Length: 118
Image 1 (cartoon, rainbow, N blue to C red):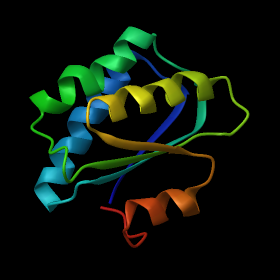
Image 2 (cartoon, one colour; image 1 turned 120 degrees about the vertical axis):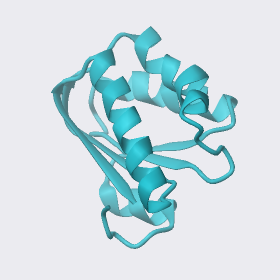
Image 3 (cartoon, rainbow, N blue to C red; image 1 turned 135 degrees about the vertical axis):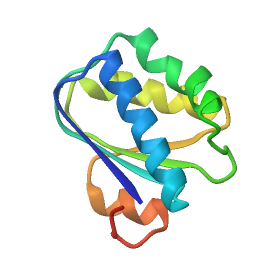
Image 4 (cartoon, helix red, strand yellow; image 1 turned 30 degrees about the horizontal axis):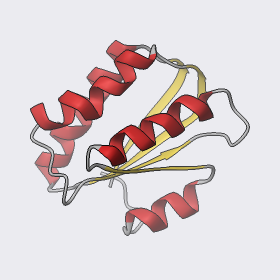
């Protein structure tokens, strides 16, 4: 499992850079399960930057829809919930398996991996 941790204010550039780095790390280790820790995010990027990831970038990076799983953990009562839930729906509509969680344990269980980070 590749774990990506975001904190503070997150920009579109931060998202793109982290996505490229995580995809490269996943390819290097043969991993297609990603855990995104957004528990310390205080502000999110503009929606258009966020939704470009499943629309274009995942395909450009050569990620495999049939194998990829992304679990995103964010606080349950956060302003970030609305945009991340919409992102989850946008991903699902494009065939990407993405799910939002409020805690780490169910996220790791959904990923179907032991909690061994790469």
